[in-house]
Image (cartoon, rainbow, N blue to C red; front, side):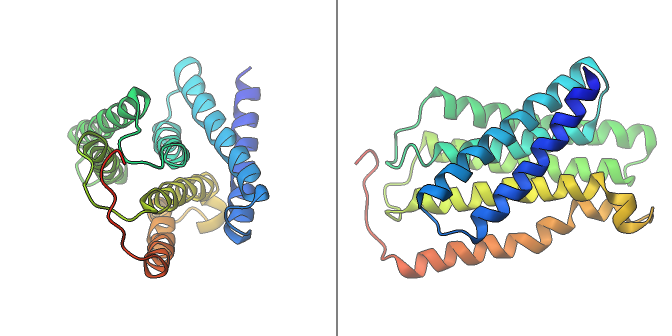
Length: 228
């Protein structure tokens, strides 16, 4: 069963990388885009579920835990926002997902301090735990704050900007997972292999910002009251 979990986890990862790439170059908003999007979400869901099962029943892996939670949360919020295009339409599911993810991020920071107390606060695992834990908790906190106290004014297509940000973030997580898992092949066992955790974010985050700004320049600023 463990072998099945590992193979299915890797297969779902490959499917996510492919569908994400196709949707990146495909026309946005069309039928194919939506079908590929559903496939992407289902793939990410299994990556999360299989990661939790592997961690729980077979072997603990900080790598699987972080990638599973971060990628699924980003995918979940990116999908959910397309279903609640009016501000104030969130449910307890959205609040719960943000709250749990914020708690996970804070826990990851704590784990980093634990690792630091044992192996040294400057070791790569501790540093990565600080970084990913902080940004995970901050992103979830920001989402939770928006849900609990939505802004009175926003762009009419605010949901699309959030969709781009969240799905883009989840795809970065998928690329990061692939890079880290194949680190020996990519960097030949270099002592700087830990940089593979950060390089995809550094490279692809500007692309997300670019598409968000491109959307902003095309759409006029429209006042939308919360719950309108």
